[in-house]
Length: 413
Ligand SMILES: Cc1ncc(COP(=O)(O)O)c(C=O)c1O
Ligand SMILES: N[C@@H](CCCC[NH3+])C(=O)O
Image (cartoon, rainbow, N blue to C red; front, top):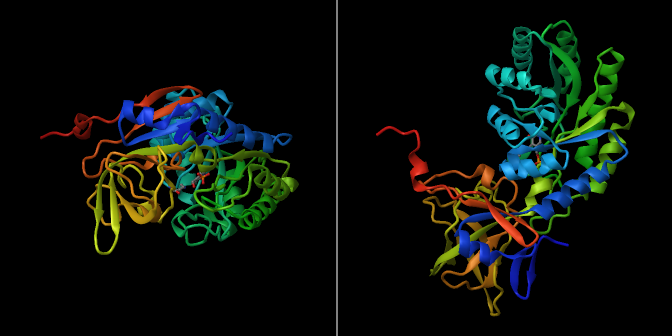
C-alpha cells in the first residue's frame, strides 16, 4: 500500500486526510508516514538478509527525534556528520555503538566526544584528520576505530552538486594514497584500522557507477587484508535514489544484488548508510495557496511554503510533485508555484500543468521526507514548519512550529 494516496478525492497519509492535519496544525507542515518509514527500512534489511550487515541510517536526511526513535526501534544504527547529530541520536535513544561518523571537517572536540560515547567507526577523510584522530585516541587512552573513506574517482551520474566520488570532490582520500595511509596508521598508537569506506554520491539511479566504485573498493579491501590490516567492515555509503517524478532507481533488491556481488570477495560485514531511500517518499510538505498572479509571461501561484522550508528546487532544480489535497475537476493551465521568499530562485514547482488553484486551497509537495526539514532555515525570518508523524488513523506533532520568539533566541539587542 502506498502511504500517500487519494481516497474519495482527498489525499491521505495512511488513514488520515492531510487536510485535517493542515486545518489543525496550519501550514507549512511536514507530514511523515510511520508505515512508509517502517516498510522501507524492512525492505532494505530484507534485501541484505543472509549477509552480515548493519544499516546506519543517514541522520542528515531527516533528523527529527521521532524518526530516529522509530529507526532505533527497528534496530537501525546511524551515520552522523557532526556532534549535533550524535547528540540527536543519543537523545532519541540510539546506540553510539551502532553509529559511524563521517565528514571532512570533524573537530577534535567532536571526535573526543564520539570516542567517549563508544562510536563504532570514524570514517576518516584526510591524512591530517587521521593524525588528529590519533592524537584524540592517545589522549583518551584508547585506540579510535577507523575506516578511510576513499575516493574511487567514479562518476555517479547524478546532479553535480550531490556527486562525491570524483577526484575533484572534497570527499575521501585519493584512492592511490590509501595503502600508504593504512601503513602509516599501523604505527600510530591512538587509532585502529577497522574498515574501509566509500560513498560516491546521492540520488543514484543507475547500478553501473555503484558496481564500478564498489569493485575498486572491494579490491582494495582484499589488498589491505593481505597486508595484515585486521579490517572487519566495508562501509558502502548511501546514495540509493528514489522516484520524484519519472526516475526509475534500482529497487532495494536490485541494489542489494549489485552491492553483494561487488563485495563478495571481501567477506566483510557491510555497513550501509541509506538516507533518502528510507525517508524521501515517506514525507510531504503541506502548503496553502496565498495568491494567484497571472502576468503576461506566466501565471504564478504564490504559496505559504518557501525555499527556506524546502530548498531542493532552488538548490538543485529538483522536482517535487505538487498535488491538491482535495482533487478538483477543470481545465489544466500552466503555472509556476513560488514561495514568499525574496529570491528569484524561490520557485518550488516550475511550468506545471494543473487546474488553477483557488486562494486558500491546500496542496502537498511530495517526496519531501529527505533533505526537506533538515535543510530548512529561517531565512527572511520565517519560522520553520511544524512536523507531524502519522501512524494508521493516528497522528501527532513531532516538532512544534517554530515561534517568532525563537527567531532571536540568543541574540542581544
Ligand atoms: C557519507 C554519506 N553517507 C550517506 C549519505 C546519505 O546519502 P543518501 O541520502 O543519498 O542515501 C551521504 C549523503 O549523500 C553521505 O555523504
Ligand atoms: N541535500 C541533497 C543530498 C545531499 C546528500 C548529502 N551528502 C539533496 O537534497 O538531494
